[in-house]
Amino acid sequence: AIFKWAGDEYKNSVFFSLIQADFFASKQQTKVSMQMLDDAVPFATELKALEWALNYKRGIYDLVDLKFEEAAVYFEKSIEVYVRVGRRSMVPFMAIYSFLCYTVAQ
Image (cartoon, rainbow, N blue to C red; front, side, top):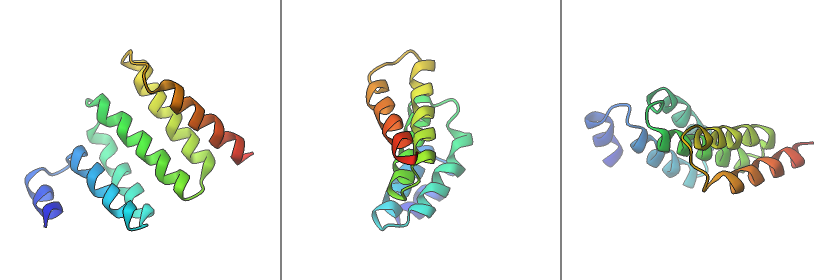
């Protein structure tokens, strides 16, 4: 019911897309989650914190599906967002995630 309300009241909301994607991921429906995040990307270009979250979550969902190289790419994209806006706090752990994913993918 809440997702229907959010879809009606806040069409194309990146925030609600993230929440709904997590809901589907918790039910092990990561393909649906990934599609929801991919659909939300065009609406997050001005919202850097949410753009970071979309890339990070997409990397996590790829990691869950054992798509290590794809996960590494999304973790790198999340680093790029942080660097672009002059933030640093998440860069080290995102770099480690990306490195580990590329290492496993080889």
